[in-house]
Amino acid sequence: MSPRDRIRHLYRRLGFGASPAEVDAAVKEGFETTRKRLVYYETAGPAPSLHPYEFVWREKEEPDTGSWRFGLWWCTRMIVTPRPLEEKLALFWHDHFAVSDNKVENGMMMLAYLRTLQDKASGHFGDLLKAVSKEPAMMKYLDMNRQVRGVPNENFAREVMELFTLGIGNYTEDDVQEASRAYTGWGFNDLYWELPGNGEQKFRDSLKYDRPFAAFYLSPAMHDPTPKKVLGKTAPYDGDTLLEMLAEHPQTARYICGKLWSYFAYDNPEANVLKSLTDVWKRTHGNIAAVVDEITKRPEFYSEKCVRARVACPIDLVVGTARRMGHTTSLLADRSLTADKSTRIAQRTFDLAGEVHYWITRMGMQPLYPPDVAGWDWGTAWTSAALMAERMKFHGLALWKDKSIGEGAQGVFNALSPLKPKTTEELAGYFVELFDVPLPESRRKPIVEALNRGGGIGSLAKPESVSNLIYHAMPILMAAPETHLW
Image 1: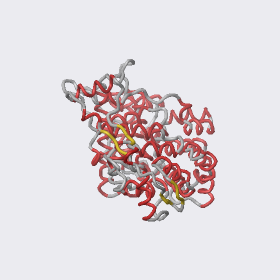
Image 2 (image 1 turned 120 degrees about the vertical axis):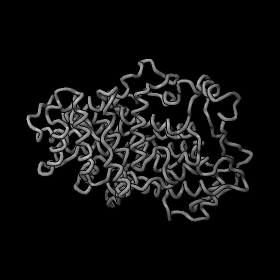
Image 3 (image 1 turned 60 degrees about the vertical axis):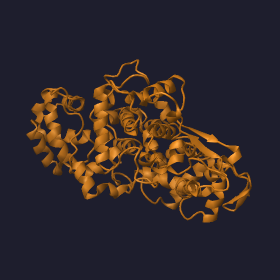
Image 4 (image 1 turned 180 degrees about the vertical axis):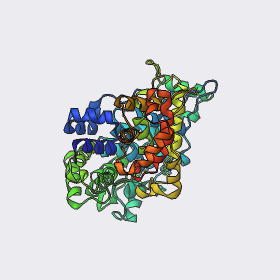
């Protein structure tokens, strides 16, 4: 496997793919330096300063805090970030700690939950587990509005063990019943809707005083302090101490490390692979970045069993396409350097983010709306006849602006025109490389014909003409199985 191919594989699995220019830069940087930069992404610089509240302001109406607007913010952040693993891990945790606004019905709660996933994505699992368990969105989703001793709700206690830590089959119903008593006294307040004033007044006051829109609370008077026997150990557990015990449990290490390997590599890791990951987990007390570091060191990660052997999820496909079309640098071109949380996002940026969000949703993966508490089905589940039909309709992003040229076409022009292809066949090779589709020359004839219908190499004379190339060639590219294998 060549250094370029190893780097492309890293970028696909730890992010959303890489353009040829990014690969060139990484080759000069060196494979190991690139690997470390992607894994320990804090070294790549700060996360985008783009604030989610920029997406709530409307021209004449009060702010709209619907979760779909924060989905647009997240899509934008995924496209422009220099730290793709941060968002890729947040997506993993969103699936692992699945919460849907279908039930929560509160955009500000969903935003706080998402930001917790992003902020703690690569830290210690125990810290993330405790933080996300206390998010009002999670608590509302799992019926934890108020936990009173004597009548504890078992839903949260069950999901913590079945889905978040131990995995199914590694606890008993008695464990669930005992554990549910540890969380008594927990609850949350939905502060935003309890405050006086209209929506805009409440929103601006919350910004002014840096006030949460909903908040976790602990009521000692409602907590059951008596001993609980969980997994064979008896102690006067409260919510925090029980979560700490579960986070440190050896079965949790095996369960989470196995899921991380399945997410970044392939299903069912070999016993020696899983042991190497759990050894790192134990040594670092559940440090997620250290486990991902170990994943990307394993030779199995670069094996034929792993490379281009999994179906790209809708976010990988659509965000990856946007990044390779140059939106990483163009998307925020209209945003003021002094923009902050009180500034309305540029309409062009909002519209393109909406287009990205639209296509991801059409392909079966609406951000902040997983189908149930177990998250999405992955792999070949993305390739049903209905969902593949949506992928075939995808022509790229923002081809037109003011009936002339959109930044997507400009980005493709900037990537292809300097290469000065002499034939359409040569242009086809550059085109499939730009979108990271390993289509052999013997199978490029439909791409060549589509590019000719779009004007061929003559279209590279000016950016406006590249839209025709994209319009004709992208559907052919989407029909190639290689496009969907990462």
